[in-house]
Length: 250
Image 1: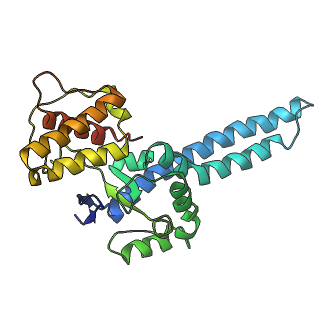
Image 2: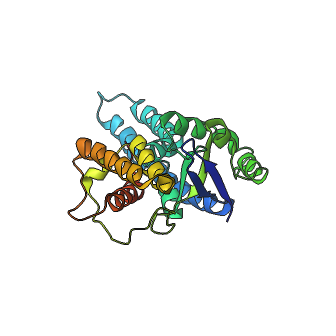
Image 3: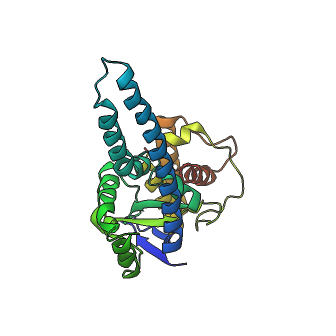
């Protein structure tokens, strides 16, 4: 499986398995079927509204067609963008296929990037069956369609930290996921992981002081603390794992 390696400014190396054409088209097929079902439901609803307008005299005759056009527009243009915004780069099809859209820097996409990449679907879909998008994916190593180039995004396979153990994951103890872990920000996660990757470069007393300061900063804002007798490094490792697996960064 092709992988994208990203070296972050914090000197943390991320290896991301790229989603291939097959998995992306599987996700697209599932999403297209869901869209088709939504079109059918919308058509039935607005057909009933149109028929009702002939019975209820005060109801405008153009109400049904107007709502139908609006719904078709929202389903076609909004389906992918809305799901990718609220599901952090995933649609139902992508979630089933185990893939996700992220920035080419490794960060989660934002609203503008989700909208931009999906506005380009009309171009990627030409002349039919995503001909332009397929050609674009075949001509670059990262399998990016035109929408990905415009928005600066890539599509990768998801892997939980249980499946890919980081080099700093020396703790074997399991810790129950805490709701407070969702309060950890992206910057705090970067701080924790930077320390965990580079701690062996420090003198023991410096390493201990740094870990304690990070843990105290997290505790002051979220209330999360190490269990009695738990080493502060184990606490930070478990916390980083919980945040990564939850996929919820503030």
